[in-house]
Length: 280
Image (tube, rainbow, N blue to C red; front, side, top):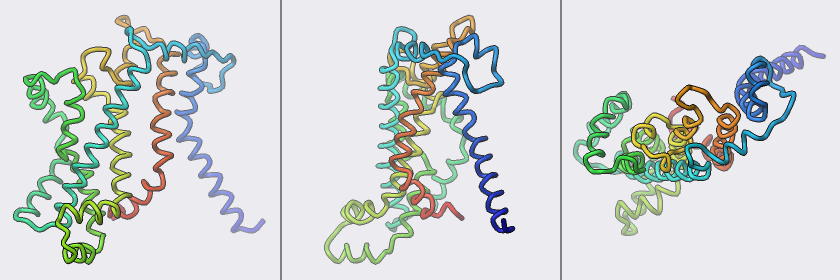
């Protein structure tokens, strides 16, 4: 075996070892969801179960606090889908304005939008909570979705701007000659070409909203409105006794929509990140 093949073999073995290290927590979660509680607590150092117990999945589907898993799943889908749609629409419009249009104070406004990335979300939490509380919107999905419709995620605005700046301006000029206005140009020319950036925005928005626990815990009070991250907390009672099997089983079930969403749009995600200017 030549030295080149040895180096190639060593590289592949290192990659497989790194992959195993990354996937180990997921594998442990998957096997823990089918292990009896006694075995799980007594054999934390091993992955493979001696006995397979699927009762945790039945408990997970039954839910907690009198609310079934289907309700938690539906609430999470509403919040995550609304967040993704809100970010895609608002950030695409804002990105088009900053990247393609010329207006007064464009540069200062864009710089101010980027500065908000460094602003911790906890700084605005109390004012937003007071605002939504006075308007009677607490314990609804509105506080979780409405801010996304206003292009408050500056990261995705920056992503759209960087991608749209790479689209040739000759297309805008040709559209103007044909009598198209800014909105028509955005809808029929820029928006279709910005599909990788749009899919990237939708994917990250969906995943972040799906996994969000803090904001949903703050704004949602009733169990009927709980999403999956908050619903998982119901498996821990007041004495801090956890239903580990059901909790791990629901965690596994909650990963399925994200996995399917990622697999469906993985190609556009890679293309969007590679061509949006984030590579430096």
